[in-house]
Length: 105
Image (cartoon, rainbow, N blue to C red; front, top):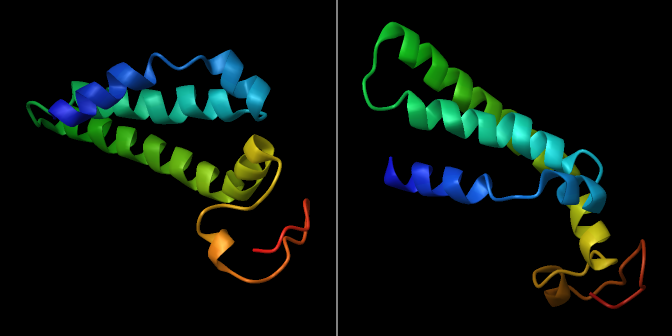
């Protein structure tokens, strides 16, 4: 659980308001789903009892919800961040960027 603890320590340093300014509701989802889910996983992973197992699974469910939200919004998040959908992967393709800069991908 050392990696989860370290991940939680780092995640709690995030500025939720700044994430929300950068992309609508990003910070709220990060705080309410990812961080809260990871807290439940970390605090309920040492000794498994019926109640800690339920809390642990709820934590995983919250993190999965964040992952689903993030995946569903990933193109928009990348586009917002860079102003373009050009990524290192898409740069290897040879077609124009359809939505923004018209760069050749």
